[in-house]
Length: 354
Ligand SMILES: *[C@@H]1O[C@H](CO)[C@@H](O)[C@H](O)[C@H]1NC(C)=O
Ligand SMILES: *[C@@H]1O[C@H](CO)[C@@H](O)[C@H](O)[C@H]1NC(C)=O
Ligand SMILES: *[C@@H]1O[C@H](CO)[C@@H](O)[C@H](O)[C@H]1NC(C)=O
Image (cartoon, rainbow, N blue to C red; front, top):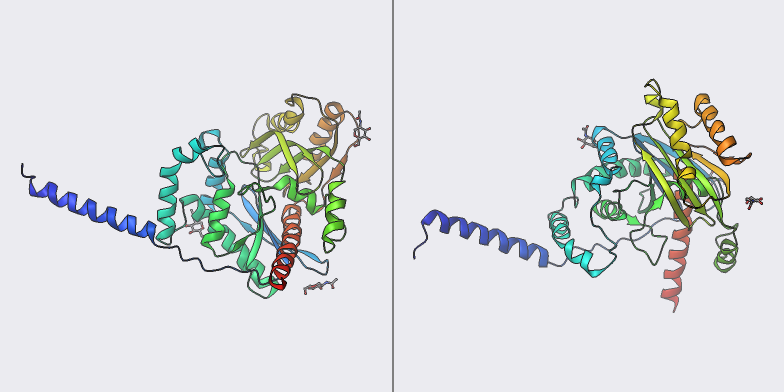
């Protein structure tokens, strides 16, 4: 049987595309060896409509550097990633079955990487933002930035994998903090906690004493609240040192920011959101602090509503932890970055001495 020539032609083209694709995937990846070239730590924090960057120097000086506004595509992406319907399989996997079911998506991502593209459209949007933050940091410190850490809000479909790929696309070293769970991102709650000077040892240069000290920081429960012009996110956070965080229950509402305050029943909705993690906790926890961050946490009306929640719902006066609320997460992330760089450089020096 003879195929009509048009069909043969299509087959030839498909075969050609397939061959090129296989070849692309099989080429060894250009692994330009990235290295860390500085001792200061750079921290990025992404919030739903803007992002911030800060630096922590080895001499102890910590500075906020810049705020970058997210444009429309950034905001739409964050809103979409806050929705349950946007969840998908992602790394790290729970089991082999997940890895197999996710292989088609991974192949698409890898193909895009091979072609020199961001691995997905979202990774492209994240890369744009991270690149702007890096440029601001580089201008401020007066040298190129080779490594950084990043914190994010706990949106249900914003995964560490995407951050990882964005850093890779930008040839930036992605600093990891959780050695046994790759791709686990730093959430803004723990970053803001560290940014308020909590959960960290006094002298990070003395690694053994530092670890011992951080091991003995007593765990406690916090009501974590991030409030911005566009969003309100809350969680009940179990925290101790700045490398540990369990957040549950959590609530993220990317439409309940301060800019919506003229809508009907707005403040009732804010009150409900603030008490959501406490009311919905399966076990009643002894919450001992309120961790507040974001660019509109200082608005008087918001503070009033927060007080109304704290008194009856949490039952007593609590510490409100809210230094530099717009920048605290970036500051904490910068401090964590500096400490991670110190450990990595020390480890690689010890390795070369051996
Ligand atoms: C620490 O170092 C940075 C960068 O070199 C400098 O800008 C800052 O003034 C220094 N701070 C102190 C307290 O020495
Ligand atoms: C958002 O900014 C990026 C660059 O940072 C740009 O490529 C993109 O087109 C912008 N999107 C919109 C909708 O303005
Ligand atoms: C709750 O926590 C605070 C501070 O951690 C502590 O002082 C208080 O005794 C605790 N209350 C209960 C009932 O456990």
